[in-house]
Amino acid sequence: MLGNFTYCNPTKIYFGKGALDGLKAELPKYGKNVLLVYGGGSIKKNGVYEKVTAILRECGKTVAEDAGVMPNPTVDKLHEGIERAKAAKADFILAVGGGSVCDYAKALSVSVNCEEDPWDKYFTRFEEPSCELVPVGCVLTMVGTGSEMNGGSVITNHEQKLKIGHVFGEEVFPKFSVLDPEFTFTLPKYQMVAGFYDIMSHILEQYFSGTDDNTSDYVMEGLLRSLIHSALIAVDDPTNYEARSNIMWTATWALNTFVAKGKDTDWEVHMLGQAVGALTNATHGMTLAAVSMPYYKHILPYGLAKFKRYAVNVWGVSAAGKTDEQVAREGLAAMEAWMRKLGLVMDLTSLGVTEDMLDDLVKSTLYMQGGYKVLTPAEAREIFKESL
Image (cartoon, rainbow, N blue to C red; front, side):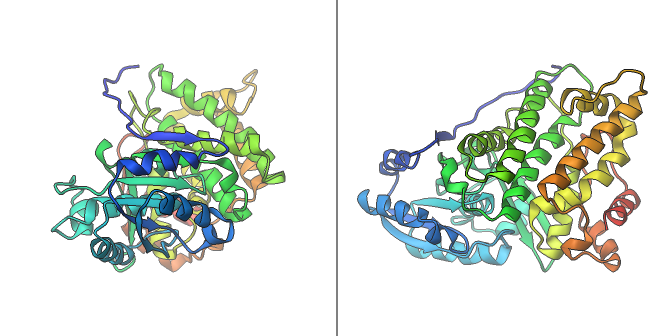
């Protein structure tokens, strides 16, 4: 490993069946007023809401609710949540839901006591918090984002046609997260497999960078093999605890900052996908799936050695008697076949993108350093076009 780094992850994890008991241990550490943040109401259908609120009552908390967090949380919703948190005099924010709910809770954490406009401060100027933070805890019901153990927060501004993520420092990480795989069993297949691909994309964004012999790359290859194996089982049997627990833990380690240490990272697939999300409000994991193959085929010649390694070590492609490029492309073909078997969306047209949106997509895309090729706007346009 060639990079120097400092590593700290302060989030405490309660994992497995009955992990919600960890909430009882954690809540007494925080103030009386809790803002309960959740999405469209699925937690009321699957019984998680009742379990969580019972624990909140048992711990003597005064609870205010901020419901209706959408899959791509908006700046308008953030402003609404700030007012709710202020009215409740929130001492603590408890996010119950998937990654979008956790992302939103962290955005609230840094915004409730911020005197400036949070969009301008955090998502335009990318400044760090200078105000008192409201601590956050998470009860996870959908896997994919890894938001339960990192400082990331992605917010959408429809007026500006932008979807932007800010990765905050360790002070914004959730103080604790509850991960019970059984809470993910009732998730609809579309959202489930979208989450699976989000996990894969997180790993690949960190894997496809650098040329040194890096321990993190070996770790990521193991995570990828576990995900590929377990995802196929979960699609056929969504209540298979072993598969769902493996996927849940892989999702957390894919983006809890561990495998990024000592490496450059890419993140251009996410920038392309987030541009699509900003214009269409499509499910995040599906936007990533739709742009991935054209993007990886485009950058393959610039990172050929790593793409060959990926094919051999992750997908089991034989290199005997083949050129490096043949091996690498066989690896991408195996990946594409797996994606289709899961039922992922593989084109932008199915997500509502039309050719007359290409210019806006290019304008909404951020262009990242760190991967094997820094895209030009013209190249991004071609990738979007190939993704239709």
